[in-house]
Length: 181
Image 1 (cartoon, rainbow, N blue to C red):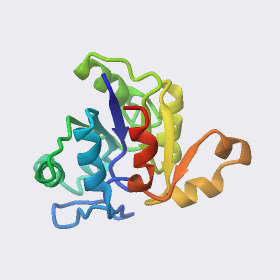
Image 2: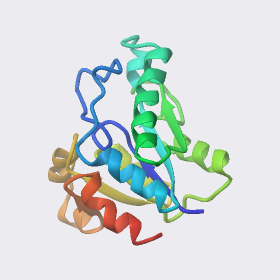
Image 3: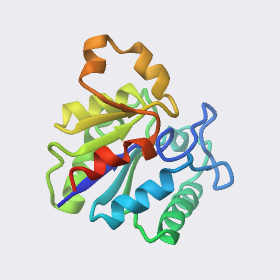
């Protein structure tokens, strides 16, 4: 089974330090929806693993998050693709949980849901927590410069950068991702 794991905010959609709290605030990054649809059409299962501490902070409710994810899935489906699963952590950074990245609980959930191994799978993210979760779980991290990505890249040592695939955005990473089809 071919599977791709994507972070959401900063990879698929424009990120905000104020959190994405509603369907109206959720706006895709140029080319991301098309890329997800193309990955899906090429036979990949697409899973999204996202920290959503805005839930734990009371900034939005579960139905708001469901509406945001419905919008994302609908846009991908309009282009002939499918998002196979969206896995999220609702906890605050200070909470002790296994699912908040850089912990690997979301990746474990994906493996259970799809009855697969994510070892070697590409995990596309924009933050250090995405990179750490990917490496801790045996995934291949891909960093995009959108969202927090450029800042993340600047904080990495040259040795850490050398071990990463780095792209301007998800659309630019598409050829690498498809090369493992």
